[in-house]
Length: 301
Image 1 (cartoon, one colour):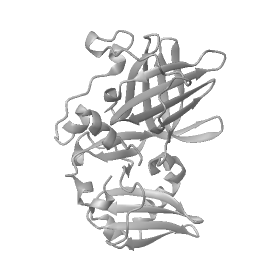
Image 2 (image 1 turned 90 degrees about the vertical axis):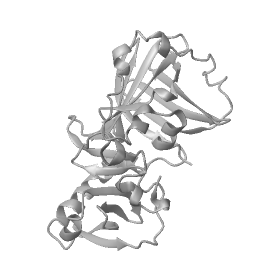
Image 3 (image 1 turned 90 degrees about the horizontal axis):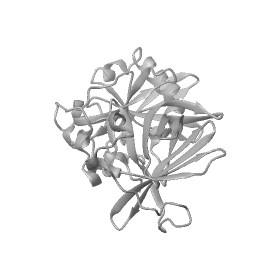
């Protein structure tokens, strides 16, 4: 089972995730504000056991691989005996690999960006920011931008989710043109009435045989599948009894909008293009009391 964002947050009581059930959210602290000068209460002593030959014999549950010009990063969540550890390996060409342990409870969303912070084995501070979007490096497309700050310098790259069951949203850059076509054509078709039921939410996108299928929800209108046939969007209503796809609704994608934090009792990751322009948002239902809570239990994450 993929260690998804909501479950991971629940394990460590993310303040922002919990407080998203309120429509008024206090601003979270910024790890960058204290970078290089952590307060005593935030100091976390890393264990000197992160080198590959001495790591605990446990399989990573999930994480991210980070690729950049002249460097590579590997962020893993390790789950054993009911506890989760976040470990990071940072390899720079021509230099030794740095191993760090990040505080799992220091992950939060601030301004739509996912952040982690911790310390390397020598006590040097490290901060990682992951921002969902269309990122390309080394002739490959990724679903997140990665920004790493170390005492040795700053690094920019791209990140993708790894693990047994990566989120469907990791392939969002690949499917954005299809999502746009479905939504654009729905405004001038019989789906226009359905669209009036509420904001469009992409619940899932995946390739099914030769075609990709976008599964959407418009307000409380139920689920709809969109495919392209000769460049034209074709819609099909999804039966209430139809089983959910793997990862459906975990998260949802909202095109062209970055909702306010706490709206619909959810937290949001901003999705951007390579210029930093907002393309939309990935929404995680924090309280299961907003629109996503109306989904059948099997559709919830």
